Length: 338
Image (cartoon, rainbow, N blue to C red; front, top):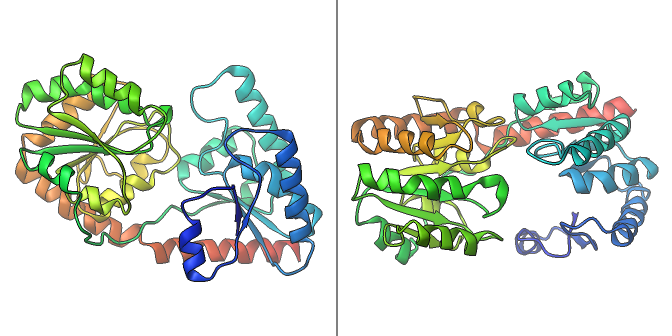
């Protein structure tokens, strides 16, 4: 395993005895560190110790795919949302699309995490259709853990609605905060929670204060696993502006928490509208509020959605299914190169 200088997965890898290497890379694209990382990866790939290199995310893909090809090792690429998806300046979008097209010929196989992501690749002429494989994300079963005492005390006061996400622009948690006044006007006893950390936390807390909802909507840090927070919620909310295939929705399915999420990317391939939850318009607080209010007012419907969510996760999104499909793509990539 190789990754950035810091990663939440490293303690688990160490405990499992999986060797890993820290590369001088991060969120910022700096030529010097990325060039050194490319050299390191090329040397690794050239040792002949590896049958396939699996690269995750567009920035890692930009350095590791050429490195693997120069090292003579087949490469599988999972973008987890192509870099040209989402609102951005036209020039940046063009550059991202051009880079993905240029790297596609040296990619032995793509793993798209949803049908929607595969369509985006085809529409943007990224990758040979024969190399674009769909392997939907999976998630672990919902396992009971000790509750967060503060969150539990807050949500115990009424029907609870929570967003669990990294607080960055993509997740659009401000849409949930802006929807809160309408939700609380319709269901005054509701308790709302934002569970997560990130660059926008201060800004979001200030927004909640300006809206005068500080008592009913509170912010909490995230402590894994997600089931710790999901166990305290009656509804899960994800108001993202763009997604490939959100794992957080799968975690809500596994824990039997009905979902309200914006209809973007592959989200509708996880959430079944009207069966496990409701879809709403992205970037629209009124649409989000209406969906939340509709479900908060119908206990029986939420109960049915809870059962349907658990069943859907069991049937479609358990980890073994994802792992098996991923291994199959590895075999195809190696066979193709041979």
